[in-house]
Amino acid sequence: MSRSKKIIAFMGGMIDEEKNCYFIRAMEQQCRKNGYLMIVFGFSETTFSDQDRNNCEMKLIQMAGLLDLKAIIMHLEFIKNDYLIEAFKNLAREKGIPIVAMERNTPDCLNISMRYKNGFEEMVRHVVEFHGCRKVNMMAGLQGDHFSDIRIEAYKTVLQENGIPIEEKRIGYGDFWDRPARAATRKFLEDGDVPEAIVCANDNMAIAVSDELQKLGYKVPEDVIVTGFDGVNKCLFKQPSISTVAPDYMKEAYQIIEMIKYNEGNPLAEGHDKVDFHLRLRGSCGCNRSWDTLSSENIKNLSEYYDDVNWAVTSVNSLFSQAAILETLTDLSKSIEETLWLWKRDFQFAAVYSDILRPEIEDLGPGKYTPFFCYRDGEATGIGQPYNEDVFFPDFESFIESGNIHVMIVKLLHSGNRIFGYMVEGAEDTNDRDVRRCEEFGMFISSAINIVAANRNLIRMHREIAEASLKDYLTGIFNRRGFFNELERIITMASSKDMYLTVFSIDMDGLKRINDDFGHADGDFAIQCMAEAIHHVASRNGISARYGGDEFACAMITENPIYLSADTFRSRVAAYLAGRSDVADKDYVITASVGSAMARIDEKLDIEKLIKEADDAMYEDKRLKNSRK
Image (cartoon, rainbow, N blue to C red):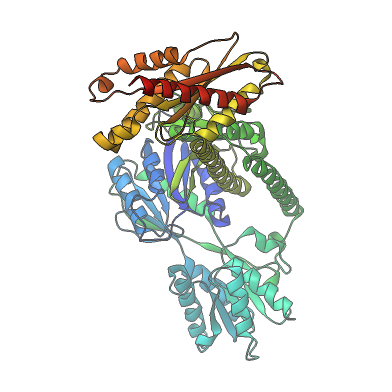
């Protein structure tokens, strides 16, 4: 059966950035029109070129390799890791499909990029030529960054065209972010040379610059004009609203789909296309336009967005507090299953490595991955049946054919370089809040799994430490402390009342001679054999212990009185040892002196007195044996 939707892989970093959200929404519309499904692979480590090639991010590329892809798109404004880029290109070559490189001219690729220089020039020209500003400062991004340098070049071009001297002191670096931009703004004003305008290389810095100027007592735009770049939505919600330059995302998405359609099946396809920007003139330059101002619909959307964020944060905190005290991942899965509706997704699926769950679920069955939770068709389910790693997720093919989802997002569940599994989400109409919820949910699930797995390991370690403190290191049976703890527990059980307790005191014969004549390894062997024999005799209805050295004890609880003489107990131990060929081959015999005492389990029971009676009987047995020699 041929698939009606053709699959495109989008390789992106920081996918919850507003620019990426706009692009994903635009691509969704184009995919719906043209019969494509775009699967977004959200990479976390995107900027370090010296990372290990076995970095966990490579797992996403392996997952993409499972799909019948028709094209790959890589967004190189956010992914700058050369080995990741080469891995994308290798995958495209293996699949025999074209690869589209966004925002960075890349050989052997279909290239598409925004006309950043032209767009920024248009804004600077508006400030210089329309508003007549001559003292124009620039808030650049990171020093040495390609996208920042392009905008600096555009700034200088417009100044030169208008006969304005270029002064390096008028260029500050805000690192594309809030705090550095505020610091650079204050530095601009240190010598009292207040600029007429500050053109910023992105909107985040423009918002910070406008806020900082107003904080310092300057009016925007009356005293200083401020402009941004990128066209992010929050520019509308500032006072004054920020003039900016917005990319034409719908045109970009249209051109990418056309490139893919035209070059389908051609892994060697090359070419280059450009996308324009559009001015969005607003209050921060004094050019409010009626069609580009805050509307009642904008305010409604912002209110809903705020309510959703506030509600999600409260809910996540509640879930996180639950996760912090959970001891098993099975319980975590149930907790998530009960609260999946918090994120309002049409489809959610998460899987973990089966080996993570096997310590809790012994009969889990084969398969590298196990579904951890799923939300589909309004129904939430928890841990499912394991499946092999050559499956993207169970029932993937029928799911994408039957639904109206055209964008899916994939995130790794991981902590550092430790991968737990992955998650996939999809909605019929994706908005920027959906994308951010996916990022938030992925981080929450990853952290929750990490915490619960740590809790589980901690509990196991505590149990092992507790057991080790109660067990004899050489024989594995109880030590003195463990013996008395377990004996106390047993005799205080309601079911033990009015039953009979028989205590045996056991002392190995001739251990010193074995050590002296045959060595301590044989001495340890003899001790271990004696412990196993005593444990065998006592295992059905009793407990055994090694006090230390050659001293042992055991206790049995029975419904009726039992009278095991020293000879009887000794004969049962001897019979067990005689059945072992490794004992029979030794040039020495392993025997013991034994004493016993019995009492009814009631309020009159005196454990110390009972044990002393058994000890006395053991010493008498040893004396009699020695007297016969």
